[in-house]
Every structure is written in C-alpha cells, then in structure tokens.
Image (tube, rainbow, N blue to C red; front, side, top):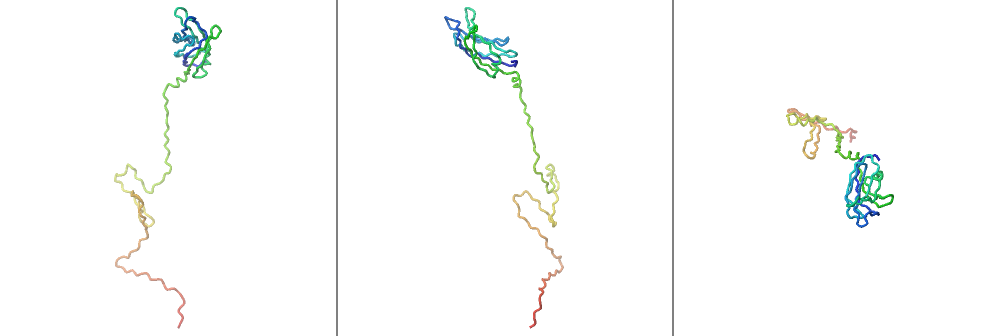
Length: 224
C-alpha cells in the first residue's frame, strides 16, 4: 500500500518457545525495521521467555510494503543471539486505524514464539485537514413585516416631533361634527351619541307652534 502517513508501533510483550541461554535467563529486546528506519526497544533484563516492553516507535510510512520484527537475546560476553523474527505485511496493519494482534516468530523455518504488536496509523491527508481553524459564516435573515396597514391620519416622523409642527387637521363626520381622535387614556370612554342639532329661534321673533293633527274624517253625526 502506497498510502503515506505516520505509523506508531508498540511492541508490548512476547511468548518465546526457544531459549538461547541454558545456564541463565535470557535478556530479550526487540528491533523493528520499516524501510531504512530501524528502532530498538530497551533490554528486558532477566525476563527469560516472557519479556515485556513499554516502548513506542514513530515511523514515517511512504512506499514500504512490510515491516520486520526481530527478538534478540542480549549477551554481555558474546554476540547477541537471534531468538525469532517475522515479516508483517503493511496491509495487515493498515486494515484498521488501531491494530493490535499477535505475530508468529520463527527461527530457521521453525516457530520460536509470538510477539504482540499494537499500531496506530494516521494518513498525511487527515493530519493536514486537522490543522487550521474552521470559519463558520452565518446568514442573518430579516423577514418583512406581515400585515402593513394604512393610518387614518398623517404620521409625524419621530425626528420631527417636538419641533413646533401643528397637529394634524381634524376630520369631520357626516354632519359636520369633528371626529375625536383616540388619545393615550386607558380604557374606552363612553360613547357619545350625536344627533341633529335643534333649531333655535332668533331673538325678537314670534314662532307659531305647529298646528295639531286634523280631526279624523268620518260621517256626520245623525240628526236627532
């Protein structure tokens, strides 16, 4: 797989079946190789066939297809002895972002133990996508007012109020009477009934009252 990114490998522990020290316990350590990159764990002194480590290695993966794992026994008085080795395909490791599994080790074609590896892979594209703040633009929507009515009298703009302008002319009803404009008083005042004004006579004149209704028409009374 030619996917580029950062590969973190953690050798956790091993279960060895081959022993290279007959008079004492082995001092195992692990070497992991990816292409031209090689890293080594600490020495598990006196761990024998059941070593464990707490190392974490960071590799830059480019075009490599496999990684090599080898477990060695450290000897202070002679050359180190190979306990077992394995080649792991990159496709097996990259099958999941966080991989954890046992890998079989062999020495001269025979099984010599197992080693547990844990890996984490992060592609370069994902690293680039995580680096920069995101800017979110929010659109503000101002809806138009729903019901727009028409005023029954002129409206004075707010900036012109209190500058000495006369009030709007009053409106007149059907009989020439001014129509009151509702004020800021709370509640509703009692309704006033407007009628036709009565005619008053001019001073110094005599007004004859209207005659009463004529008598009803009928037959004359019969003679006695």
